[in-house]
Length: 415
View: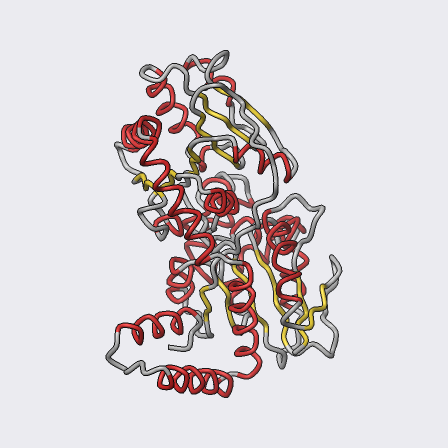
């Protein structure tokens, strides 16, 4: 089976480019892949199926959406939905290309007359851009879903959102693959306990709440250090916040963009990883996957995909009126209890090996693409082989193992 593969690739500084650089070698051992050059609108006629990686960045994914929209109707089109909220992407490929009518039509198609009126307000500069102020209220995923014949998603959360948006094709839940941990020496940025936060520094990553919780924590743990790694979003005044909380000169270490090798070294050197999110765009987190692989205890927001993480690997903080208080208590627990950190870290590494193993993910991808091409015939053949194999080893339909087999089949839309 020949697969046309559309994705941003390194050296682009995007999580999806890193994702594809990881996945492609493993998937290429199972399928015949043709990686599309950036800007190409059509796959070769020999391709049996086209795979489109779609995220929210119009610079990285605008050309991929163009290719999806121009794909022949007869060819199966599987979209890997890295984000569900695609408002910024849609704005980029319409308003960003001086196609205001395209933006108006997209808003009306998914949100009715009210959506169109709001879009007019944006274009007339009467209200702030919705892709900056309220994107989660207007996901605009239908702009992409209408062209897909199947979806690959990384969470049950996004699967449910796609179904609620009216998508009727098959949806395969495939975990985000885990990177192999490179041989790096941990880089220690402080002598005391260190809390690491990796990714873009902005309000949606709950950095204001994290800084307030850490400032309270330092009153009892003056040797603790907060490491922030990642670029600061335009308009987010980090320095002012640090000054106000007394963290500008002590307690915080700041790094902007770092290369992959140094990222692993810095992550390996922290005691706890924090990855908060609200609102969520339906994304998974590459830095969380790296943290799992390194066996680091996690603190995450109790939203979206992050809520699906097992409780033995992550402390989940609700986004409510007591968020800062709960976050501070979670950090207090993990800094004070080395045994808790060790237990959670062991469970995290086991989860990465079990659920996020690269070869397992590549197998799930291959199965999804085969089913996209072969449809029901492939599904029936797989179910028949699984049933025969279970019977051969004495597993009855009422056995506990049968329930686990059914759960695994459901993950790939076969049960």
